[in-house]
Amino acid sequence: MGAREFPYSGPMGAHPSRKISVILERHAVQSRWETHRWLLAGVAPDEAGEARVVAEDEALLRRLHPGIELALFHGEAEGYYLNATSDEPSVFVALRTDEASGEPYPYQATLSYNEAARWMDASERVERVPAWAELAHWLGAWVEANYRPEPKERRKPRSFAGKEGRLRKEGSQ
Image (cartoon, rainbow, N blue to C red; front, side, top):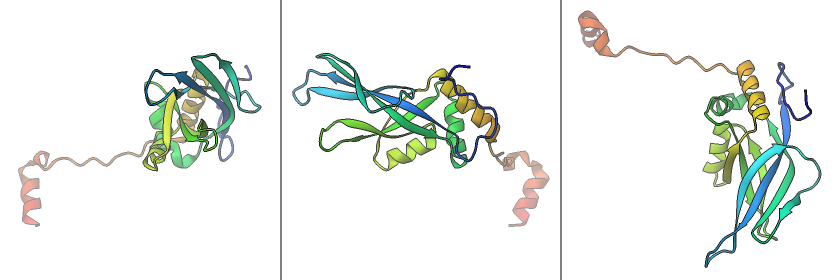
C-alpha cells in the first residue's frame, strides 16, 4: 500500500487525523476594482515543509500550504456522514487574510458539513473542493465504523388511527 493512501482498519485513537496540503491560486483578472482573485484550487496529501510557490507566470500564481490537519471527532460524526454519503465528498477549508500581505492562507480544514456550516455562520470564508479518492475512502470507512444514524420515531397521522382511535383521542381531550 502506498504512503499516500489512508486505509481505515478500525478504531484509531481518540481523534484519527491526516495532514493535507492546501493549494491556493491567484488569477489575474480584468477589472477596474481588482487586479487578481485568489481561489482554493485543491487539496492533496501533505507535502511537508513551508508554504511555497509551486507555479508562477504573469496570469497565475499557485501556492502550496502544507501541514493542515484534518482530524475526525466523534461529536462530528453526523457531519462526516453527510459528507461521505454525498455525490462528491469534499474538504472544507476556512481561509483568512494575512493583514501584512493581503494574501489568503488556510486557517483550518474539516470533512464535516456541520462544522463547515458553523464556521460560515461565524462569518469565516469557507470554500470546498473535492476530496481525492483515498481520503474519501478513509472518511467513508471511519463513518461506517463509528456512526449509526439515530432512528427517527415515526407517528402515524390521526387519519390512519381508524374511527375508534380518533374518537378515543377526541374524547380524552
